[in-house]
Image (cartoon, rainbow, N blue to C red; front, top):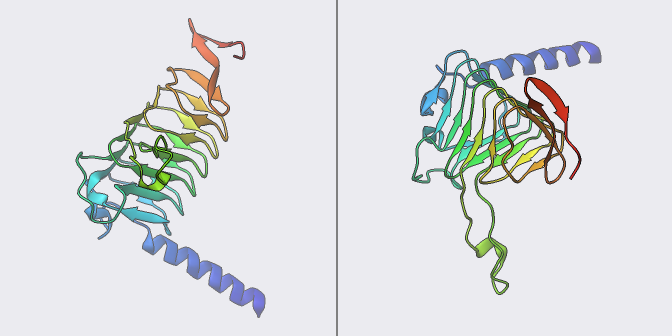
Length: 206
């Protein structure tokens, strides 16, 4: 009996997940600035708000428990549009967070592992007489080029441009720009391989 009930419960959860998923023709999907055909946000998300400032291309899948937001609070009036753009044929891994305030532009065919975090805003800390939470939160645009792959647990910080066809290793923290056709690892991330004259070359560690 327990096995039977377990199977029924699992099947019902899977069905509910399919019904609750957000697509271009769903009520929630129509709130987005753009939501491309054959794209989907799997249920359940962690946080989604200010969808009118978010563009999602076609054939893109966003995994479960993903935080996807524009601005800091629901209903916030953003100064740019779109604040977050995710291109065509992208895959955003389970548990990831894309939190934009000014501009996050993710190109086509970008895939991420689970628990990747991308943001264009950070906390100021220069004034030692005030809590960090009360200080300025500078915003700098983030761009991730076509065909790149961000490994599990990697973090992309404000002001970074990641080129096309870039591999970011698991648990790396990207604080500076990464060139096209490169592999970067570490915290902070450093380029360890790069395509030079049509061949991949291993670079000396710095």
